[in-house]
Image (cartoon, rainbow, N blue to C red; front, side, top):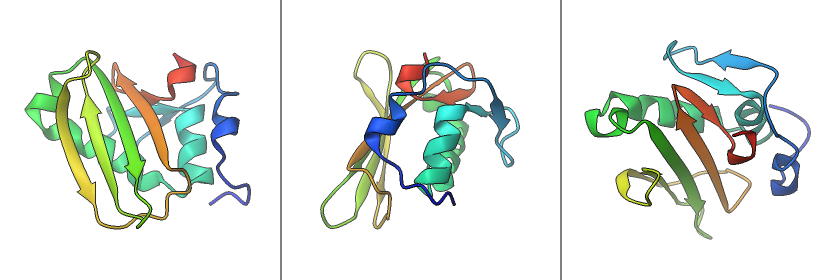
Length: 120
């Protein structure tokens, strides 16, 4: 994990990607510099794993554009939700505990690429 802590303000600096990283367990899924930064600085490779693993669900896979939102509660539980581009919930996952440092984050998935909204 990176020694620099994840801060929401840092994510705004990602406006494109110079590199694409291939997910080791799901080779069809790649992710951008911004998503990589979230995983490194936030200790959140598990978040990329969760998004990739949900692609096995036919309802999720059928969505060409996916909005993934992680919302962390004060008790450190969280909910990971996938919506289509029209704010319709496709699936959600309750996470009993997380040490993710931000209260929430949104990642998008399109064309098998996970990225920050600012990288669109």
